Length: 221
Image 1: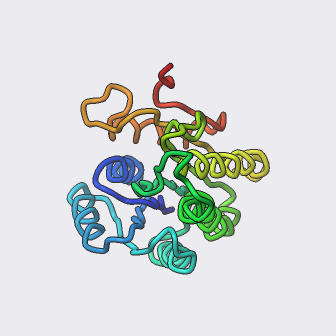
Image 2: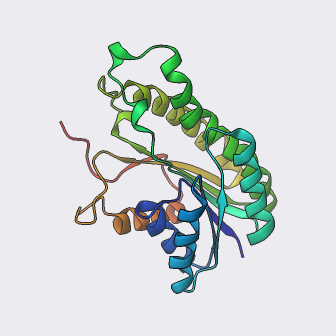
């Protein structure tokens, strides 16, 4: 049995994707800063018959993030699928003319150093398995920079570049890197961007293993 590791576990998209991958037979490792929240999510999944455990870590803390992923693999089985989808902090989203160089430290650590740390932690196990999937979830500013949210626009662009390079260099090793862009808000009533629809989309990306970038719906004009 292999593990689906979710970085940025929460009650919306995170829980829905954990449930979808868990229903497919994967054990589930949930990673976020809030240990109490993780307990609630694992209890929800247990009621569905899904084996899950929470591992507390902060994506801005490289050591804790690496430790959590290694502990997840040791406890639950090798990580075959990694989803990186933590929600950016509100203070990352300043207008571009109000953004200083120092204001970019945390967004870049969150969206570039965090993904690099996660990939470095799980890649050896995927290579041993002979397969793997790396899923990166971003908002529309990853592909259409928004001057009202400069920190995430800049940092998501870096994450996108990193993920695309992984897509190219890891494909010969049967490790698929892909990005899902969600242009609007995730809402339970959204036709294309409800948690359940997005979870199914991410599972489909894992199975189909074709192109790098996917959109939940077209970017608005």
